[in-house]
Length: 485
Image (spheres, rainbow, N blue to C red):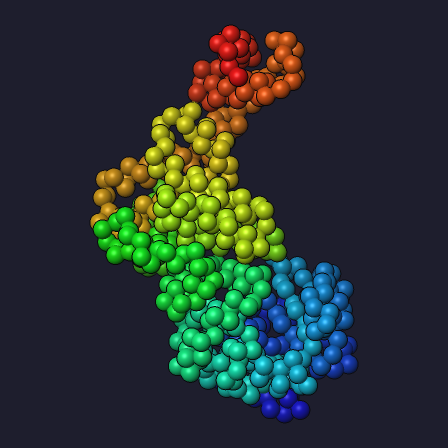
């Protein structure tokens, strides 16, 4: 029995409160239920446990439904053929995912052997002593050595997506990939093309969410994996850069990603020492600090299936350096569709890239320019500002002109101030006339002309030249007399 092979690890496992609640639920299940995978790894490493995977001999869907019912959650069938169910439970201010699956073989040992890496091939019996570790492949040794090692020689061949996962885990935890595992990755990277777009997207998204995302992308490119995932970026390797500090377009792209990561990490509270040492990012964050809460809320947005907006922003950063002859926005949207992102995500990605080109050339002292920018860009304007700042800093490199950058920061501050402090007065001023009132007062018929006149009135309000309903009617009559539309 697996329990007989359980032992005490070198340190206690740190479990969240939800584990004791799950123990009470599975106590009524007539078979052992095991905590497996990343939850065990993180508990052993003393890291927060965000998602939980359970395995048992039979009844994965049934047990997930039992958990959801007992803990007032929701249950979903992930894979009926493989008997995999998911319970989503409310925990404090968020949700925790509990996936329950039938063993990937005849018993727990076979299940663990069939996993990707040894650090993910440890288990704990949920209803037993949760400080006893079942570790047939010495995952604890690899965890302590900060080493990523495949479970067996065919681990990557069995699922090529594990090649991408290795790079993400290595970046996430600062691990070294063991030599035999690294050698196995090289011939298997082409196999990624056989994986579903959704699985690739989900793993890649987890990489883009990392505080070390730029380093992970660099490693993914260096191993040739990025060329398989995103062949449309391959041309950057041979494209000249616009900045003097970088030898090619790809190095410029990486520099932009790094600066974007510095700014975002500082704004979201994941600041590291090197972020504070960056003059460019540091000055920007100081100016943006007054809207830190609003910016954090913006970056915490979740798209369908809980995909993070931060990852979408980082994807946008990959396409800034595409150049005017081959617009990054169009290529980015094409890639987003290939990743099976939602229409909303595709639209946001395209708009943030299209509008970022205008940010640093915008006349931030003109209310009309600010009004038009935010009316056109919408929420994507915030992303455009962050991307534009990262693009400037990445292209400037170490030769940043401090005075010029301070002027850029002042402009960015004015642009974002309009969004966060002047929404009701400058961007969406209260309407002085609606369409029905305009048609009634000027004897107009419904049509595009009415919308054009209302747009001009709203812009005049933003500029301060129209303040009353009477002012609006005078402007409308003048517009009609001059032949607008």
